[in-house]
Image 1 (tube, helix red, strand yellow):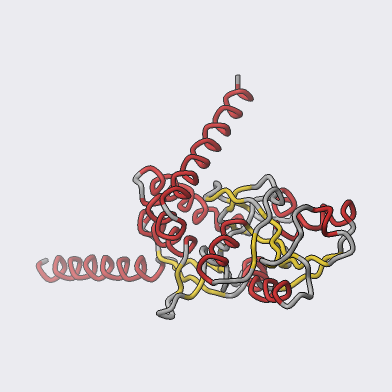
Image 2: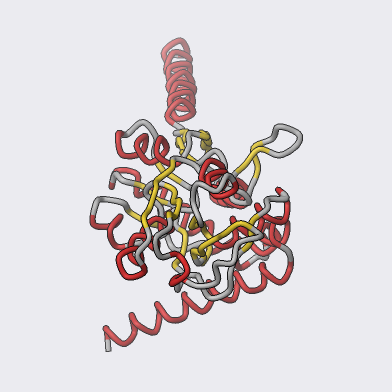
Length: 278
């Protein structure tokens, strides 16, 4: 009898240990793709560290929600393609939430930063309005809201568009005089000009209405990750971590504005929901 009880105890202990091991092995590490150079949202600093707003937000959300992830710096096109092909679970790369992407299968989180897109010209350029671009060329980055903005105006104002795969090459095309302007997300351009010393400027009044950035998945099977991201984002906004991250890269004024815009957007969404349900 004692041997039987001992055997059962050992069997139960072994089963428990095996269950613990299996549970540990089943803990998923999510693969999140991102861009390579989209300062200040993702870039490599002087210490060869990959940093940025998106990088810090992802880390803060994962810590808040207690999940593991691997951030892969692939570039915009390659990152989106990896998620679409199932080689990565999600994308965080300053991806503007827009209907065309939703229609093509992108599933977005709540917005985590509201940004406009702006035309940018060389610092000695006399271009001050869309009309001044007639007969000239504008550089854009493939598949971005900036490209959509430029393409929506090109026929009306008579300019052509050339597409590039990354922001630095697009900027260089303007600096070399091959394009009269480029179109970039405003906070990215402001940071690049200030910190990178680029001989570019942002003309007043040549920006879009703006839209929020979102974390994105393309497979409903990854909804668990999306739910954790949304929950973590709400928590880091509430506890002040989000504002600290934006302050670190864009300053206190921009951080306060970013928090206010997200709060306003959330309030508007809740009001619309209430209106529909009443």
